[in-house]
Figure 1 (cartoon, rainbow, N blue to C red):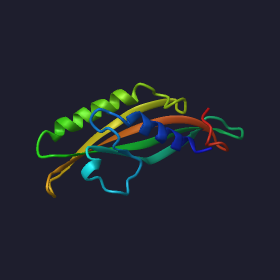
Figure 2: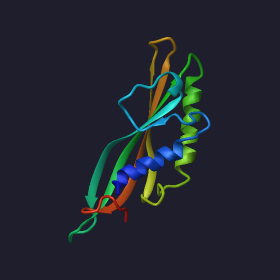
Figure 3: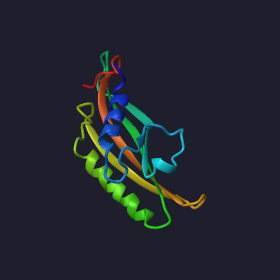
Figure 4: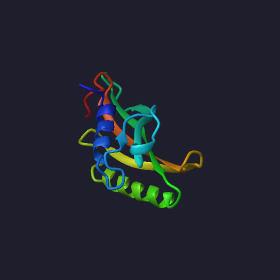
Length: 147
């Protein structure tokens, strides 16, 4: 069994793989740089998680709110804002088709958008970040089974 957080991350990757603009360029990593054939592409990783308790008796029921980051990379000299917006559109449409992330979550929300640009290199790289909040529920002694 794997942690529900991983199951949700795997579901997000599967959901975003095959989008019209990014295709198979979806990677669960924040360590390796995005370049060349990986562009346009998406990096997916966990940022943080908060836990609250719904019950008092053990094993307690936890409500977890996990923040996933989607970093979207586009290379080009023009229209990169349009391309980023197109990819965000495709991501939003795909994510909102199943708010339960395959039955593992209670809710999925995109909570923020941020963009940045790097003019270094042979072509500028535009990057935007979508923050996706996923709420799920587990028992404290069983984080591999959503309830």
